[in-house]
Amino acid sequence: MKLDSLIPAPLRKPAKPGAGNGAKGPAPADLKTAPPERPSDAKKLAGRAAEAPVDVLAWVDQRTAASGFLTGMLFRKVPKGTNWFYTLGSATLFAFIVQAVTGVFLAMFYTPSTTQAYASIAHINNEVFLGAIVHGMHKWGSSVMVILIFLHMGRTFFFGAYKYPRELNWVIGVVLLILTMTMAFTGYLLPFDQRSFWASVVGININGTGPVVGPYLSDFLRAGPELGATTLSRFYAIHMLLVPGAIIALIGAHMYLVVKLGTTAPPWLKADKPKNAVPASQLDAGANGVDQGDRS
Amino acid sequence: MTRRHVFTVASQGLGGLAGAAIVLPAVGFAVAPIFHRGKERWEAVGPVGDFVEDTYRQVVFTETEGIGDAGKTTAYIRRSSKQLGEEPGKFIAVSNRCAHLGCPVRFVEAAGNFICPCHGGVYDFQGKRIGGPPVRPLDQFQARVRNGQVEVGPRFSVTSQLEPVRARDPGEFTGGIWEYLYPPRPSTFPPPSS
Image 1 (cartoon, rainbow over the protein chains, first blue to last red):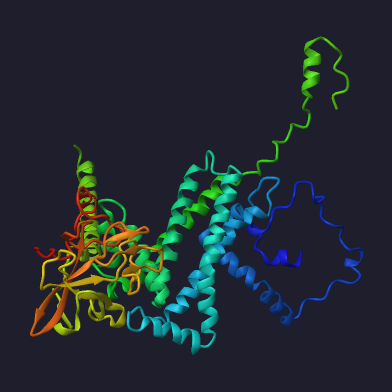
Image 2 (cartoon, rainbow over the protein chains, first blue to last red):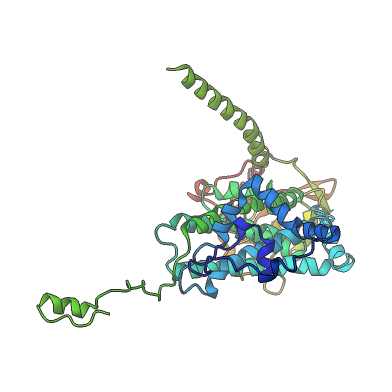
C-alpha cells in the first residue's frame, strides 16, 4: 500500500475488476464538533517532500509518456505453466551485462600491445586493488555466458518456442550465439600468454582451412601473414567495440520481439477447455438421439 | 517524373554517396593487410661449419619484427644430403610450425622424426608427413650463405614431393588442384626457384 503510493498513478498496477466496493467511506460523525487541526508549515513541507519522488516521476512521464510502454512491458501476461526454464534468457542477458561492466573496468588497466599485454594482465591480477576478482569475473563469466546461451537455446528448441510466429527471433538468437562465440575467441588472445597465443594460432588456422576464402580470411584475422602486433589490436577492437555493439543492438531486437509476440506455454500444457464444453462422448450421444443429461 | 520524385531520388543518392564515403575507406583500411607484403628479411643464424648433413641444429630467429619474443620462430637447419638425393652444397631450414594447425613441432634425435605435441603429427627426417593429421610436409625457410654465415629468409611451403610453392597456412593442402582451392596469398613471398 505504502509502496503503491510512491508509484505514479499511470504506473500502478491496475486493480482487478470487482476488487473494491467503489464507494467512499462515510464522513466522520464528529467532523463538526471536533474539526481537524490545520496542518503546520513543517507538516506541509514534510508532505511536499514525501510527494517529491512522485512529482519527479510524473514530470518525466508527462514528457516521455513512458508509463504506457512500461506498464505494457512489465505487467504483460505470461502463459500458464511458465517456469524457471524461462529465466535462462534473462540469465544470459545478466551474464552479458556482467561481461560488459567488468570489461569496461579491465580496459582501464589493459594495454593491447604485444610487448605489454601480458605484463598489464599480470599487473591487474597481482597489484590492482580487487583486480584479480574483476578479471576473474570476466574470465569465468565468459564461460558462464556461453553455457547459459546454449541452455537458453536448448530450452527454446525443446519447448518448440522457435515455431511460428517466432522464427525471426530464433534467427536473431543464432546470430547472437555466433557473436558470443566470436567474443570468446577474440577475448582468449588478449592475455597474450603461451596458452592464448597458441590457441589463437590454431583457431586462426582452422579458419584458414576453408577452401578458396580461407587463406584470405586468416590473413584478415591476423592482419598479415604472421600473428603479430596488429593481430592483437585487431582482436581487441573486435572484442570491445565491434561485436559488443552488434550484440547490444541484437539483444534489443530480440527482447522487442519477445515482448511483442509473448512467450509460449510449455509443451506439456494443453490448451484450456471452454468452461461450458461438452465432453466428446456426450456430443456423440446427442447425435444418436440419446438423452444428453446434465451439462454442468 | 515529378519534382518530389526527383528530390527523393537525389537525396537518397547523396545519402548513399555519403555513406559509401565513410564505409568504403573503413573497410579498405581493415582489409588492406591481406594485400600487403612486408620487407624480405634475412637473418644470420650461425657459421657454415655449425651445420652437418645427418642431423639438424635448432636455431631461433625473428620472423616478425617489433613484437618481441612473440615474433620469433624456430627452424631446424642441416646441410643437404647426398644420400637423400638432394642437390649438394645447400642448406635446408625446416620450420617447426606443424602443417596441421600450427603448433610447434620438435625434432626427436633418437627417432629422426619431427613430432607435434598437439595432435600427434609425425614427419620424417626431410619433413614429409608420415603420421597423424597434417596435410602436407613441414614448411621451410629459404637459406643462403653470406660471409661464411648461414642466413635464413622468407618462409615457403612444399608439396608432398618437396617441390617449393608459396607459403600456405597450416591446414591447407599444397600441389595439384589444391593450389586453386587454397590460392596463394598476396602477403607471402614467391617460392625459391629450384
